[in-house]
Length: 208
Ligand SMILES: [Fe+2]
Image 1 (tube, rainbow, N blue to C red):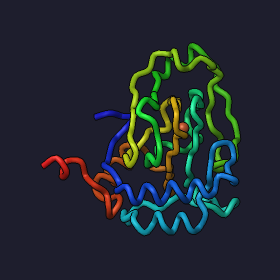
Image 2 (cartoon, rainbow, N blue to C red):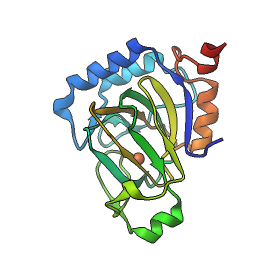
Image 3 (cartoon, rainbow, N blue to C red):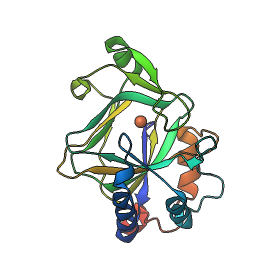
Image 4 (spheres, helix red, strand yellow):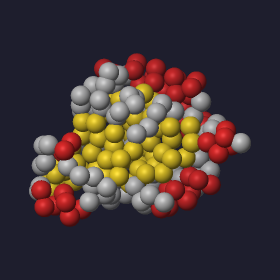
């Protein structure tokens, strides 16, 4: 099993269209690629999210959920980083993407040899993001790559160096949720495999 990426299944097209339209309606609130979830979007998410053990992380100081539509324009990308210092994993839903968009994970030693890590406060989660100053990250050897299609629901390890790229022509829009207590990748895989969304289409069921 991969230690970086775990695919859970797919959500139905009507659910994906709903969130796409709601995120697109809020593009005027876009801040550095993020459309932060408001109470309404969080409520709609919780109508289908059915795991009783996992609570969406709430940032008290900012009075908002750590849940967002992450929008990346064609040609855009995110350099090599790890998420917040306490954040270990996230649950993603591909709302809109292109077949060749990628998310890659890198070997710790390779990255630390090539670049220097700095902590940056982008104000998204209350903890510092760990960024590495490597500009040509697209040409660096990686240990794993994931490509998703619309509707895919998957868990990502955010505590291993990773980077992403939108190849276009569409904007890449990923709905990302983080959970209370900073659960790690293995915990999320085990919890969410057990129970995630009430309307999840499990791939194995579809194949039978
Ligand atoms: Fe990240």
